[in-house]
Each structure stands twice: as C-alpha cells, then as structure tokens.
Image 1 (cartoon, rainbow, N blue to C red):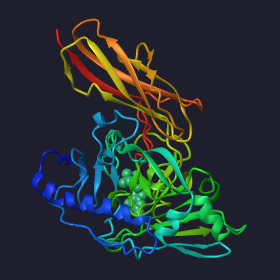
Image 2: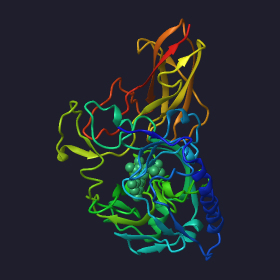
Image 3: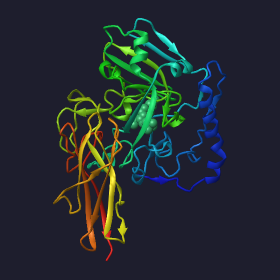
Image 4: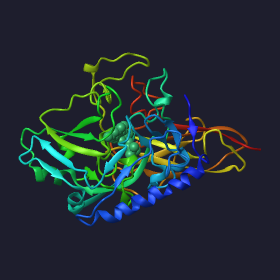
Length: 403
Ligand code: MTE
C-alpha cells in the first residue's frame, strides 16, 4: 500500500492555482443573479499536480482522486472543506458549464422536470449538519485483507450542507404511487467499460425532511471535489448514497440494480467468519452508518513528555445519536466516561474529551468505545466482511509516557 502525503509539496503550483478558488468564489456570487452568464469550468487532470485546497490530506489514490483526512483533523465540530475526505470511483467531470448544467427529474412522476441552478437556488433552502463517512472507512484493518481503497480512519468529515429538500423537488414533479425508489446519476467521466456510478435510495428516505439536493457546503458553493454544482445529501447513510455532480433524479418502481447497488455496497445478512465468501443473495444494501468513535489525540505511537494527558476525539452514529463515549487507558480492563462536547446536531458527530493522569512512565493502550441511543455499542474487534464495509471496532492508540 502506497501512502503519499502531499503536505509541503508543490507549494508554488498550489499558489499559482489559488486563483481558481477565487474564481469559484466568484461563481458563488453569480448564482443569485438569475440569467447571469456563468463561466465554463475547466479542471486540470494532470495527476502530478498537487491538489489545491486539499493540503495535508493523505492521497490514497491519484488515478481517481481519493483523499483521507489525517486523524488529528477530527478536532472540530465542522470539518473545513480543505480537510474533508474525497472519494471518487471514477474521473471527476473535466469540464462543467454551470450555466448550461441542468438537473432532470423523471421516471415514475406526473410531470418530468428540468431544473436550472438558479431555479434550485430560489427553492426554499434547508441546512443539515451531517457526518459523511465512506462505507469502506477502516477497511485497511480487515484481516484477511480485502480489496478496495485501503482507508484507515479518516474517510469521513462533518459539514453543514444546504440546498432544496429532495422532497420539495420530487413533489414538484408529483411522484406516482408506483414510485418506490429514487435513483441518482452523476456526471463522472466513466473510464472504458466501467459501469457508471448510479445508485438508488428508498422513497421513504428520499421524502425525509433532511434529505437534500445540496448546493452548498459550510456556507460556500460545493467545490468540484465535492460535487459542484449539486449533490444528493442522504444524512446518516454511507457516503455512497450521496451522489455528486448530480444530473439526473429518476423515480423507479424498484431498487436500481446496477453494479454500485449489487454486487457493490452490500452487507452480509448474517455475521460471517473472517475470509468467508458470501453469496450476493445472502446480502442487503448498506444504508445507515454504524456507531463509531475516533481518537484524534494523542496520536498512535506518540512519545509524550507530560503524564497529564488530554485525550480527545469524535463519535457518531448515523441515524441515531451518541449516548456516551467510554475511555480505557489500560487496554480495555477498566472504562471511564468521556465528557461530550456541547455542539450537537442529529446526524453529526459529537466531540468528546477525557483528561487523564498517567500513573507512571511506560507504554499504554488507550481505547475509545461509543454507545448510541439505539443501544448499539462498538465491538472490541473488527467485524470482517468481504468488502470491508462499516467496520466500527473500538478505536485504539498506543502511546509511550516518558519518565
Ligand atoms: N458520486 C459520484 N457521482 N461519484 C462517486 O464516485 N462517490 C461516493 C459519493 N458520491 C461518488 C459519489 C462515495 S463512495 C462517497 S464516500 C462520497 O461520495 C464521498 O463524498 P466526498 O468526496 O464529498 O467526501
């Protein structure tokens, strides 16, 4: 596995490309003005170029951009866009004319629609603070190894997404009684014969008040890596549900059956032994996220000078809320309650902290374990499955306290 940090590399290139970010800020200024002429965006595809606006991220893949957040960035309620992970199955759109861009809404509806960005901007906007996590986050810890991007702990982030409710868009088109699932298609550039990234969600989730056609992230228009100009935001669910560069919404009478619904993104119906094959008929689509916590500080392998140690991190639970986070400083023999941070929003992680005085110099294993309002508790060890999805074992770091 090759892990490349881009921190400090190609700084000159980054600076010369900053103008593109300013340019995007300019686009945001244009969005309010209906009928304004919007520029054509042209995005570099040179893989040797550092990724502007994503400094310090761990590059898991260059071919299709996959960026992981270093765990120490899990230290704020809202993750800055610069530190928000990126997961692409294929190439991002290389050109996209925001002025020409349209969102079609069709399938099992009374009145198929084609919406422009100014029309979506004029629809009532709703904001949702959501922790987005890739289903494969933690896959690198599966033993035996499973194929796929070898995410460790940071394929996640929390952002404030806003835009029209998907429900309002669907109601404008008038969903027929035959409409049972809602399919999303993005504008990704599909290499060769790879199947396009198309997935669907059940109509019940689509009609929930917090499911969005998101246009903004942390108060600014979506950046290209996060789906400019519009993405689905399916809160509490695996990141794959939230289709980027959205161009088509189609209401279906049954679940979409393409590659990214089956065999992709499916969980075994029963727990399986590590290494065991599972037939697709014994699986179901992965939906809501698991209960999980992450230790942001101290870092794994830290050699700390002071015996007074501030342990902190985040905990999240998909569609449930965090009930408590427990910390063990003696390899899981005893547990103490961490203090939960005051910032809270359904679907968003909670910050937590625990102040600990190490009794003496030596080596320690610190573990964090979250429990949610649905009664789910993080397991002690990795729950292996063939794709390494929804892995949520209690988090652990090993540190050395100096004499
Ligand atoms: N949408 C499109 N069109 N193409 C993709 O490859 N990746 C999905 C989802 N939406 C993807 C997509 C996956 S697997 C995840 S985890 C999230 O986007 C990641 O969102 P982010 O890159 O904004 O963090």
